Image 1 (cartoon, rainbow, N blue to C red):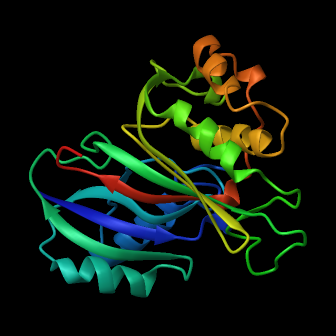
Image 2 (image 1 turned 45 degrees about the horizontal axis):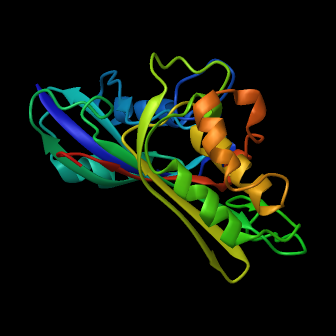
Length: 247
């Protein structure tokens, strides 16, 4: 039995999310359908993370197991000929027994993009959160520093988050501004449901002057979701990379 790792890119705009759901088209669903057509058997895939509806991926990872002996290039070229235009396989690798896209991951990196221009942008509306009010990026950077290290992120998870523990290790949290856009890059051992979007929603409140940068420390200590900022919209979020091999 072979274990194959696929690195997948997708525009999440028209998907209900990664995971198969009864209420619409999912990324997992279209990949499994393409695999069944190519391999002539039902082949489930497991994703490294369950991106929400509207969230994109530059390098989502999924794994599958099969007895078929098709060459690795078929998992790239063959699947891409069968997949819809908003999903593509970037790479395929043969992995050792026991590899699992989610359980074997050592961390993930996400990038959240904000368009901070005074007018709307037709070109950015599917990939950025458009915030027309000027944001204080310096204050946002100051607030972001409080997230680094190991903390309880209970104040930044969705109400229906199933995680048994809310402690996570934040390895990187950068806020960069360029040409009217803000890119927020976060890297952690793992993330809670909607955690990145809730972190960003809180940082935008800091940028608007609605809360002080130091208020982040109290949010982390109290763990009260109702005191943190709103959930940022999904279209600005991209899963950028999944780390394996000790990282």
